[in-house]
Figure 1 (tube, rainbow over the protein chains, first blue to last red):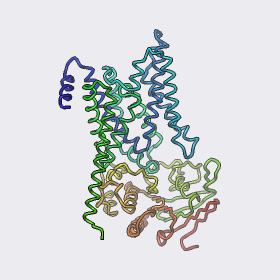
Figure 2: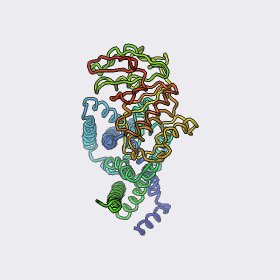
Figure 3: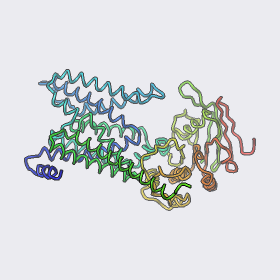
Figure 4: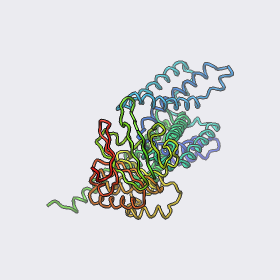
Amino acid sequence: MYLAFFDFFRALLNPNFDYLRFAVIAGILVGIIAPLIGTVVVIRRLSFIANTLSHFSLAGATLGVFLSKLLRGTVLAEYISVLWLGIIFSIIGTLMIDKLSRFYKNYKELSMPIVLSLGVALSGIFIALSEGGAQNLTNSLLFGSIYTVSKSDLILIVSISAFILIFIVVFYKQIITFCFDETFARVSGINVKLLQIGITLILALFISVFMEIIGVLLISSLMIIPVAASILVGNSFKKTITFSIVFSLLSVFSGFVLSYELGLPTGAMIVLFNIFILIVIMTAQKLFLRKKKKQIKKEVPNN
Amino acid sequence: MRVTVKDLSFSYTQKPVLKDVSFSLQTGDFLTIIGQNGSGKSTLIKCLLGIVKVPDGMIYLDDEDINSYKKLVNIGYVPQKADFNFEFPITVKELLMAAYSQFRPNSKFNTIINGLDLNRFYNEDINNLSGGQLQRVFIARALINDPKLLVLDEPTVGVDVDSLAIFKEIILNLKKEKITIIFITHDTFFTEGLTDYYLELDEVLNYSFYKAGDK
């Protein structure tokens, strides 16, 4: 592992390996932003929404691929943006989840698998209509391809990440109050509807921007798993967020090194390392609790 | 703060929940709202807090229609514990600072923290607190922005007997400060001696509003 790190950092300093540096910067940004958004998603018990939206925005992105192919050679082709179609579909997906959930009183979560299925079905059709011409792009949308980040992609990723960070810092207090206690937030005069729209927009932007580099199938795990691990060790909000970012960045770096050495997909390796951290924490917690119980038993012997 | 409710009716789609409810409170009054589940207590509170929209002319806060009332920071709210999203770690300090309208705690903020004796567990995760401690945190959160009206929704549920005695003293002090208090409960034992008025609601849309000791 030590040698692998050494190899990877030597490659990172190689002046010919711009693509590697771009990938690492994108990886660091996703490592910081994903658990921040993930925290909001987890507290609001919306973990499945992220997964649903990423699948639905895939429909938008693949529609973009199909339209680019259809309109190739015309002026209109220049205006087709896979990214913006992904964002628009994310927003449409959110609205659909909201509208569909109103049809049910006790099964509100049913709206999510419905929207997810629609997204996957539409994506399947758009991919088929693109007739293999865009196979590479479709493949990277599904599983991610972090090494294809270009300079212009990176500028967009940095700008969107900065926008998301500023939003979170500016509305930090309102977001915390809203996440933990929506009724209290309303009574305190927080414009809950506007805040909800803002959070949804942030989620849609994040998913659409990072979809191509991490992959639709993995993007939501980057948001959820570091937070799932940090809840088990944090005892304050700030510490829990800090832990989640540390776990996330650790997974990003390890994922890069492992995938570089083993020639396996980076997104998948990052997610696997995230799950590895989660399992280590769960096991350590179980052992610690068992030890504590034994200690208590020793201190308070049965009569 | 004065609270006036005039012929308030409210229904969810087809089902009426409140019908022609009227009452008024002067600054510093204490009202206890009682009624079984489904009697419309929670709906009445939602109307009073502006969470659900009511037609103009039904609720006035200090003579201003609730639909045009902007100074929401004047209303303190202690929710039912079930409304809070537990499990994610957050300390008492973090929760209070997020709800606080200022950037740094002022002397009034510190007085509330000391008065409610939150110092002992100020940096504790709220998920580790007892029912009584948690209730004090929620009361502090409702008071830090200096409210003129305090609404407490079933605040005695799950609170141990010792904490109830402390809680009663806190409420008594708030009453002395002339804060108008609306207290929703199943159990009138706690508010005896504190309350000025009762509002009783039932499942068949009847209500009665009366002065303490009149019934």
